[in-house]
Image (cartoon, rainbow, N blue to C red; front, side, top):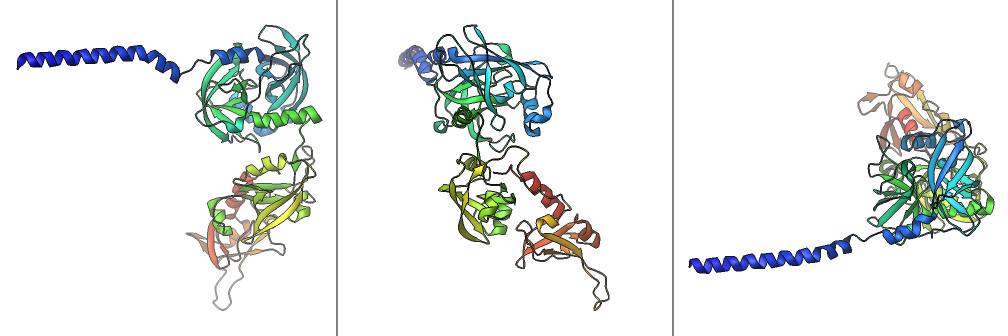
Length: 461
């Protein structure tokens, strides 16, 4: 029995050795199939990627929206007045059009572009858009320039390979690889946030550089990172090329971006609000404010309407609406489907051109204690002579011009464990129970409700 065991063992070892040899031979090819080389893609793309340097003129930062200032400081920092900044860009036309980020060239007194060949050119700012952080530059070169083709960011899928090319920390022609981590990211920089998230390394100096797919087509413009220390931690963001292409076309045609506008501010429909309005789900955009005399007001839209469809496109989230409106050419008449008092109806709205900053007349959201603007009044209850008692609480009621922002028909003397006292009625700071048609919808502190509502208001669409 011993010899047979030895023979079987030897045979087994031989089989294992043979399999190991086969695996060792096959492994390089298998690895190559799983991890393709990007060398050919980079060889085609890198000649069209440029370094953008600027000398900033002393300027007041108040020219930028506060949210964008905070965002850029957090992600990249900004040079002091008169300082230099470095970024990236890429050539989209042989005659010298270059796309980069607005924050790379904002406030620049002088812009220089350095090619992959080390040639340098003065660049002219054709136009920029701070809402999407896109800028278009132009240089004059003695010969046709290499260009990068634009791809389809809408066709990108989470998990697709992408390459980020740029000049991080001044290190020219640096390429990093990663995947699409997510799409449609909202960072709070503005109403048109729709970032591609990637784990390809993006660092200071990458701003404005291309994010390309495996075919070497631009699918995004590297714009921001999230990092506690200012460097890459695998969370980077790029502006989708579909949006950037539209912005560039607008700048080429008009010198600036022409957006559609209807004059509403919207907020998200939360599950609580959906139940209060009798909706089936937390979808659509709740109209929180209407600009007096604006297109929406002229058409009959009112605060409290829930916009569920813009033309033939459903409005899934409140932040979808500003995009839809902005991309609609001024003068277009659009059927808008809304829910009002639980019933669906259609209202035609004629889109106008978005006014310049500071010229949009909009009623500001009232502060916590300013209830009149919300169509809500709070008053003390008079003593009840029949019971020989003082007031037992406060009363909430609608004004002569009701606002759908204030849901109650009447109020109880308690909300949860909090009494609605005379002081609470005067100051509107304590909790009251808000009712609709005799049924408790939800309870909240009025001031907290208004504060939360203010915080959710979007830029007027």
